[in-house]
Structure formats: structure tokens, C-alpha cells
Image (cartoon, rainbow, N blue to C red):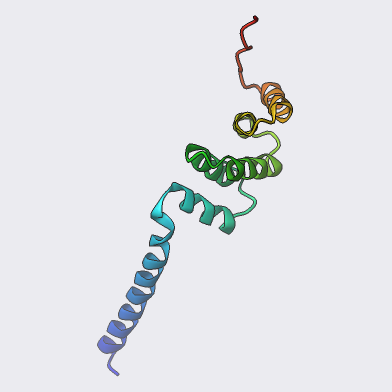
Length: 120
């Protein structure tokens, strides 16, 4: 093969590789939830990815999936105040007020300003 044909063949192979990767990645971009689920599997130690996946699930009212994702986020980063607050919100939706209060208190300790409920 000549140098020009070799270069063309290599360029074609590289192009096909990236085309295949693009098609593979395209299925992940179906929606926010699938994107963050995929990325949280690829980077399981990243608390922020679990948080964003939980947020996407909460927006869909998938409370148990959201709970699990926020719990993974606080497990990986115990000082992640927003994850504690979102986990508290999910526990309220799941009718688990004691767990909700625990995570609200943890969020307060970490500096989140949570208004006190009005007194009866």
C-alpha cells in the first residue's frame, strides 16, 4: 500500500470507531435520568452524579429510586448538604418523617438554611 492509501485506511478506521462510539452514547442521551444513571455506573464514587440521578428520578416521582440515589450520594459524600436535604424531601414523600427529620438536621448542621415550620 502507498502512504496515501494507508493514511486513508487509518482515517476511515478512526472515523468508524468514533461513529460507533457516538451511536453507543446516543442511547444514553434518551433523557436526563438515563444519562446520569449511565454516568453514575461509570463513576460510582462520584456523589454528584448520584445526586443528579436522584433529582431526575424525583422529578418523575420515582421516589424509591430517588431515595436510593440520594442515599448513595450522601454515602459517598457525607458533607453533601443538598443531597441530605433532597433525601429528606424524598423521605417525606415516602411517609418516613423520622428519617426526613434526621436528614434535614444533617443539612442544617452543614449550613443549609431551612425555615422552621409555622407554629400552630
